Image (cartoon, rainbow, N blue to C red; front, side, top):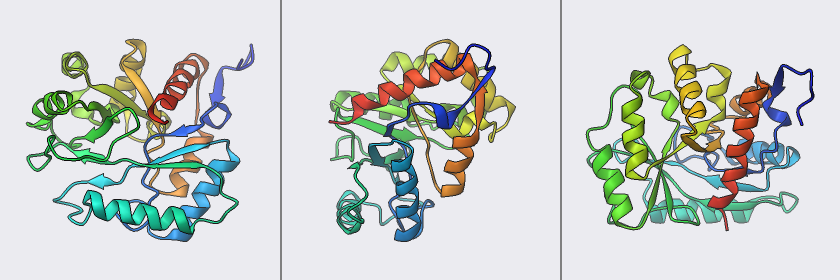
Length: 241
């Protein structure tokens, strides 16, 4: 479907309709700061054919102490209700939970339609709590999704770590921005391995700004990789009602 002679495919030409990882909810974390900018990217999303958008603000008491479930639910409600009527998408509030000693898996969490919960860990070291958190989430009936495993570049080549998380029941979400090479050669090596092994399940923009999203749109990737990424895009639909 990508053209017989085309060696590369622009991400903007792939059928991305369900956004599962974004920081568009304004003024709550290190993503979008105001309503106008958030509205602008949603208009671009709609233009590009995106129909479902999950807001996944960081939930990390050390960095963003105000981001409790009730606070984020109120901000989400206010923002969605204030959007212009010509923005016609389905919106959902989840969260991106930091795997640290403050995350409690036995408390009400912001999750996707199928009880999936997006988690992350430090970009500098393996969280000493991640296995405990994955186990705890599974035990409570949640389905953990590790965000952007390719960004944990200290794990490049340590494939048994990813296999361990997978075998525990954790699924992986690829950042589309990572395909641009923005996070270096180790990140691209991880992407290559996890795609080849079929270990990714979902993909998302992780958009923190319109500039980031436009970079994603214009990124070109090899045709074979594009086919693998398109499959992940289709999988995103299962996280929404």
